[in-house]
Image (cartoon, rainbow, N blue to C red):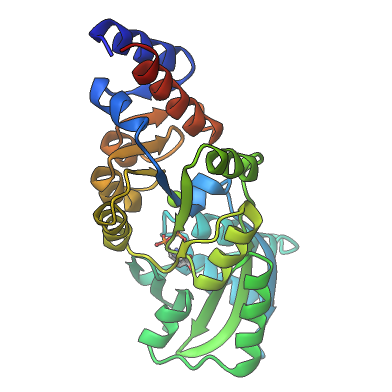
Length: 298
Ligand code: ADP
Ligand code: MG
């Protein structure tokens, strides 16, 4: 393609809300045959909501929600925001509810949060957070978790003084049109794979809904980048689509890093292409534009 064609291509992209950072990014995109998708906030809406809460011990809902809010209010994680919002509604009948404060807060990336509240140790997070703190997960809790995961919900565990006290199910539905995008990509001979920090069961359920059969779950940021490199080593030209800080190593490692415009600044900086309208369909727009630019003019 001529430099003019590349300029026209990036210009057309910009006018459609697809920000392509330079000719190299536009050129690499038409060679992509494999796309790695982050789950939360990329394939899903990214605004999780609590859909169920089960208490397993003899503790009042008021006390339980107070401890959970105190621990999670310090976290920036979207799951934490959903949990705080829900837990606050559990005490909305009280005239002036007083919320305790956490004395010692710790955010454990990819696992959850840990805090001391009212002299109790409170853990809120996934299974490995519990296992790493020697919290036993009884069989009935395992069943509740499995049920949540089958419905594509994420089960968040709450332990108080190392005893499992509750399970909160959170739903983060697919973006409308996500399934169609994956199916169109398939018809364009581009395969898709999900890489997520979420657990295997939930990831599998979302994958099934969206029509993807390759899933890497419980992935730390470095694992996401490793997966990209592994696919490249197998001869693929790989694009990564993500929105989070935890996606940025993979966005950099990919042949084409594509950030969701509504995502974090760090992801947007790490990417070669930014989807300003945060529409997944624009992954296809970018590939089409690159194919047109690099196939039409020779
Ligand atoms: P993702 O956002 O893609 O699910 P993360 O690596 O941020 O990936 O988190 C992985 C998992 O750790 C989450 O699915 C959740 O189970 C747990 N987790 C992380 N942060 C929190 C939090 N603040 N509260 C509860 N659970 C959390
Ligand atoms: Mg994400």
